[in-house]
Amino acid sequence: MKSKTDVVIIGGGVTGCSLAYMLAKKGIDVVVAEKNYLSSGATGACGAGIRQQWSTKENTELAIKSIKIFESLSTKLGQDIELRQGGYLIAVHDAKEMRQAEKNVNMQRSLGLKVDILDSDEINDVVPVLDVKGMAAVGATFCPTDGHANPFKTTFAYANAARKKGAEIYTHTKVTDIKTINKKISAVKTGKGIIKTNTVVNAAGVWSKKIAEMVDIKLPNVPFRKEILATERLKPMFEAMVISFKDGIYFSQQEEGHIVGGIPIPREKKGYKTMPTFSFIQHMSKTLTRYVPQLKHINMLRHWTGFYDVTPDARPILGEIKELKGFIQCNGFSGHGFMLSPIVSQILSDFITDGKTSKILESLNVNRFKGKKIDHEMYVVG
Amino acid sequence: MKKSAIVCRCEDITEEEVLKAIEEGYTDLEELRKKLRIGMGPCQGRVCVQIVIKILEKKTGKKVSKISIPTSRPPIIPVPLGTLASDKDEK
Image (cartoon, rainbow over all chains, first blue to last red; front, side, top):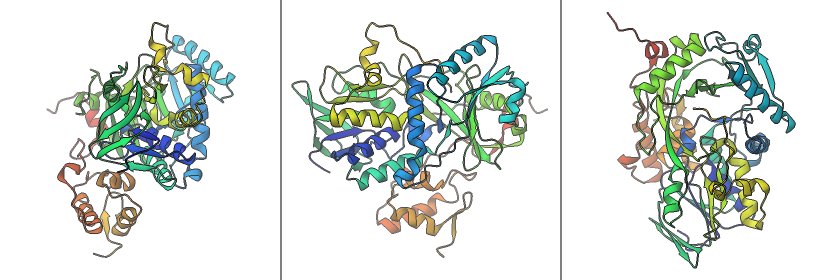
């Protein structure tokens, strides 16, 4: 293991690996310390979706920029990340939801995004397998450039490209302590040795809170356990990701043919336990077969747990901690880390290399929770 | 074993593909699994994982620790969604 580096990134998920790539590309000496294997946390358990339809302007802007990067990522990294832009169909169930949807669509359109508002009889033109009556939809919004990509392949592609540019990635290497001198980062202690550095990026997902505690910083993030299931492979049935904020369900058909989706666990659990529950399977299969009745005869193959690293406003925490120079946050994605990873790593790499800040970076600093009114993202699913 | 021998029947992965991925640097069993989808099919790794471990150990010369063997996910065998969604008891 190296004894000295410019930047240590804690966490080998998609964001950590993508930031390592962005920094290494700019000639920065960077190390990633991952306690398990690459994509072993939320990245590897996620629903793979990438969407631009949000209720807050900041998230929509970030997501639009993120998709732009995703679109050329396979070419740039030299590995197929299996990006498929089949769109996101957001079901709308009543007049109140429709008013909110119209407001959001207007905001999204003002940012240049193409989004359609569909009547209930237009839903099947986009996703023919849906039972519009069963799902009790009065309409939907649809953005054709939303989609999904393979989270493992994206993470590995970023990691491989980062290594080629000189980044060192240590897996099965747990960070045990962070050393500071005069309110500045000085070193990171790991199970495999100490690395001297002036900059640490906390990209440890739900474990970010624990990493911050090592330097007596309290983050407002809370770990929420989430569950997902996957069916057997099927012939291509539909291309869009289907979601509903009222039912909390989301599902899509992946490149390999599986239908993958989730729904909130009836009794939502906080904490770090990973045991899947039967109540989830029942709730999910009931709702999914209500949306797509023909799936009744399809086998469910697997069912697993992952985490949302949830902040009070469901938006990420990015940027340097005021009280500790060199301690940079990159966490709190609240279930949307995968889809935001390309743009977030670009913003943070600009800040780390040139000290370049921006309105969006300032607005996502952890300071925002101190006594100010927060603008909560309402479009959270799963 | 022939190089074209199928190691993972669910996902049609050959020994050659496993060896190629190991050469590309996927020497962690979990990363290998996530790259090739080994153990993610209906058998949940019961057929393939032991064989992949042998290939990995032979190729890298390192023992794969028991702790790193991938978790089997419920259910043990595939179950139709309609059955899971049903409230009716069998009479």
